Length: 168
Image (cartoon, rainbow, N blue to C red):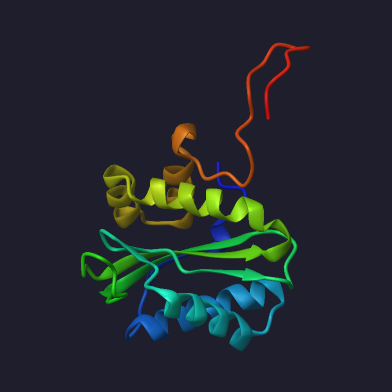
């Protein structure tokens, strides 16, 4: 289950001229949805990119940034066509971009969520299915198909008997 990604956050076959063009188009779309300043979102994503490429390899990048101005996480899934250079560790051009804007007030949940997104998108069968998806609904179905691969904001729900004490 992906609580902070919806079909309206998915863009397939986005044509760009490079990393800057891709991040600009993604930032504009996310800023409009969140009611944020477009340039502020783009600048924040570029600052994050300046600390080190958000390319994680295998044609995937996960640009991300923390914001004071939002109260809940936002995400965007974009498939680029053609792929662009993100300066990732394997030098493969990127065609899958999962962008995250995270509220600074919930920073303690950010790294676990980012780690889970990385884990999901590093799964070869998931990546290949995402590359073949024809619609936002299909992308959502792929990402939600296996609960063990789901992207969660908080702790996973537990299956405990009533009255059972579960350690935090």
